[in-house]
Image (tube, rainbow over the protein chains, first blue to last red):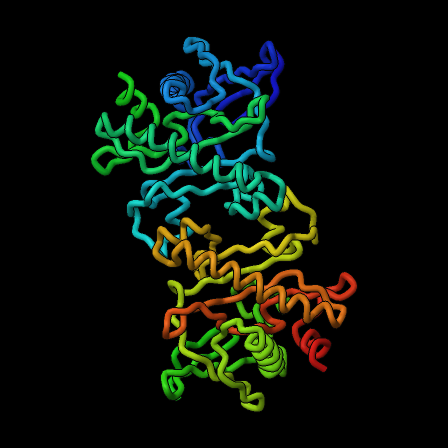
Length: 226
Length: 226
């Protein structure tokens, strides 16, 4: 199968009928062996992380489908740690859309003069450009429009979908006594030009806490699905 | 007179009737002797810069008053390089509001993957927090609201005033064959809670070009007013 792109935590292959196959790897973003969903480097490798991430992603993408929220999901092969998805047109070289319920990570780093660590936030949404070289700079609605990356209407849809999806994840975690602090989503356009969630929803792209303690990605999937 | 605050390019004193006196200094932001309106450090000292900045500020604040745009300006003493202004309530520890007509400076640094140097922008407005320690982080409308710094309605007013004021400056420069690339403004609330332009409008807080060449602050004032 033809490799299209070698990502940090997933490899992307060309599949049949214009679809795409994602191979989930055991690599997790972070630094010096410490998990950080906001990091731009592979910080550690966790055996079984690929399959675990795919299980959780499959669970959530099926849940979102039930609720009528569009995603790129077609089907998963858990044994192979692969997910078949619809092909997506990206916004520029890709955006990261972060939804925050607590002030941690880069939010705290940037706005620490105005908030306490862990302070509640009301589903705060922000967009950053996927650009490792420039350290994923944040960009506002007008900037995205002026650079031809996202129209103002698309931005509104993006924020609406982000809040809906994050709320689904938050509620699912809450059932197991887990609290979602923040989550990073990605979006693309399907062949008809409709916006859909792409990439994954796993322990690797969110921060979850239990009783004030951070829950690591593999542990999170176990607590949630087993 | 009681010193309230020692700024990088201005000192702030308590005046009578709850007013404030600004003393314009000869210092200019930049690095290693090179002028940069986006810098957080004093990069150079230019003899006569204080008076020059005040002359230009006075010119523009009087022009804005004619157009009914609210500023904190009361009167200037050019000999002393001081400006008497209304007292202002700041938004948090202060915001910088940047209006951009060309992609240069920190815009280019952040979004260089999506634009060429000097590419035209349609009065792009962005807000950063005045926070030297955190390198003046950009913040979006929702972030400002959630951190209690600026309501969503105040944000709209801020952007509207920024575009109006920047357009006045741009047009004035154009008369002399100068092109405004970007400008940094500050706002506060007057005693009645109305938003007004504060700080200054001088060569020190904008980038101006003539025939594709950057015009230095002191030179700009001369070309504009003499």
